[in-house]
Image (tube, rainbow, N blue to C red; front, side, top):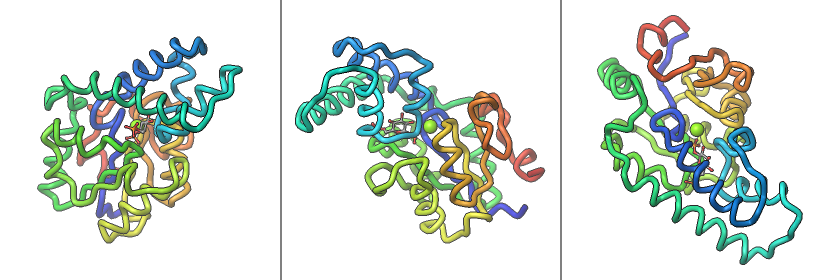
Length: 215
Ligand code: B16
Ligand code: MG
């Protein structure tokens, strides 16, 4: 295929902030005495903050008002941002920086398709913002993954069609969104969880132009 653009997910693809999301949600779940482990956390990857909270609360028995939920989401985000305070360019996942350099050199467009409302802040901390020709994050979308809106909007901003772009994702919901949107999807992680992806790599270290050109 002739690839005109690469659209990256953020958490779990560019940087391992997924572990901070987990720690922050775990802290909240513990306070609410709701059982929550890394296996449960898979369901939260790629989905919005509010949906993540609903998924956790469904595991408990108590009902909460909208105001209480708003406060919980705020608290989780503050906790998440405290964990993120220490991240810098050294936290970029293996091979990503080199791959971005290759894409730029070959004039392949680079986009971001992230559910996170903190995406720009994180990209700035990693010194990666200037690589992106389009940034679509949680502030720009109304429908969360597995809805393809975030990737379709990124493709639109890049002025490419879905079949001309590749989406790189670590979450089941994200891969589903990419497939629904008509993109070629590269999964990063466990092939059993990311079974719907066109191809799955165990690590971002395997991403490079040679591999991309073979797709
Ligand atoms: P925030 P991605 C997603 O980012 C995360 O995977 C997901 O766990 C998180 O709930 C969501 O962003 C919202 O993040 O609370 O920072 O707005 O993987 O789509 O880059
Ligand atoms: Mg992700």
